[in-house]
Length: 167
Image 1 (cartoon, rainbow, N blue to C red):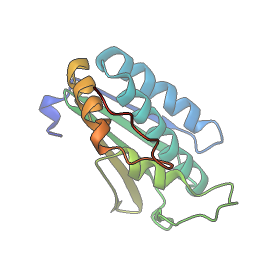
Image 2: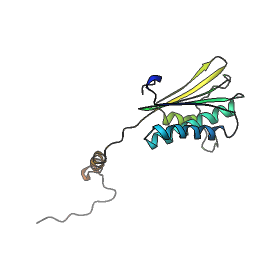
Image 3: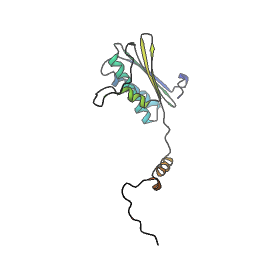
Image 4: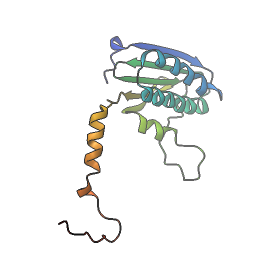
């Protein structure tokens, strides 16, 4: 994705208090801007979830306001979440199977093509780039499906039934 700001189709920046509903407010902001410029509903949903996860982390760790920027490009979305607390750099840990928290950065990593964290002065900027996914034409999808399910490629599950000779 080209992240040259001159190529952006829309930019939205908002500042939210580091409070429990900051993620919801930021998600609504992202939804509003992306609904007007992004035709890909899957990309919009992924971007909204990414905003929500990044803002949730920032609101829990930061003692300052959280600044969210969403930049839409013709081929994707760039998201930045900034706060003034560089003492809490987000780390991607593997949560235990019974953990109630700790999967946000794993989700962001899976949804984005690139993501990272930069220390800026006394604060930090956590960012993610999400690229549009080309949608295969229906005919191509059907062709790929028929290749994937070709009878010669399917191994029998149980004992083979006897085949009667064709006369």
